[in-house]
Length: 308
Image (cartoon, rainbow, N blue to C red; front, side, top):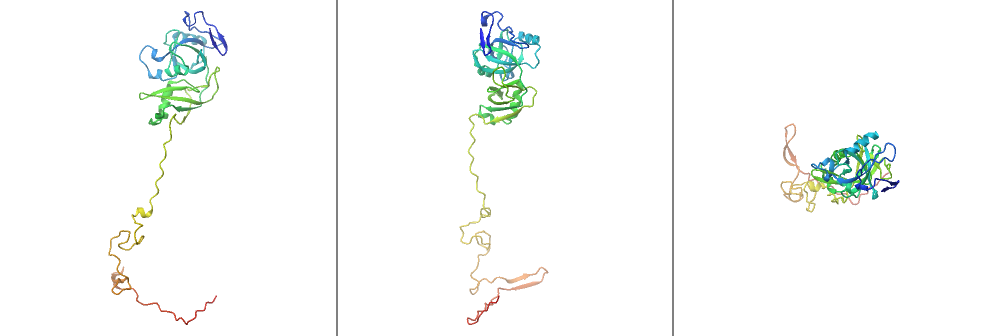
């Protein structure tokens, strides 16, 4: 006997070792419902294929194809997978091929972990209907995934090996011989199926994908922004110079020239505006130098009357 949340489902005497274990047990109209032995893809004869081991589809025996055809179920076919010993362990999958041994089903390794199954444990496989997905939010379980050159394109390519996604699942993909895991955080629509978690159909659908911060990822601390250079720094002006900002020769601007002479008031001192020159018209001229006329002093006895 096997049990589920709907009650007791009888099977033939002998359980897993009955001669016809795995035969279809229809619980309702147009419903596929079977118990089989679960094995990982590594137990499948032949060379391991990445699209099988790192996908979301299972491999069933040829008799399952015959039963599904007899039921005339609408394709693509979707299944709800349950661990009979743990009703909380449930997920959804599509089918890839019908080449397994009779009474056996092969699942990707990540799906075996999700259902908490060991090699050869019983599994219940029931046909179901899933709505087309509109939105999914995923969280990478390895922070190294953000180092991939184009994470979204890599994930989009890998999801082609999946028919369905289930909320709460942690599925695996392979890229450049590296394995990355993703937690399904949120789905839309999020309608539960068969008493289990919500699942969506991702075949030929325009699915919006959102990424949560990868598990264990810590945003690097940003270094404080360097202060913008001042004009003095750009011009390499030494503000500690005795004559900062002066444009005279020999000042802190570092412009080569004759150092400033003595005060113009001193005898023999520098006399500006004096010397030979030439006008724009070509006429030669000679500067008269700085005026030596002194300011007339005001008679202290004089009175200045201010009028409005």
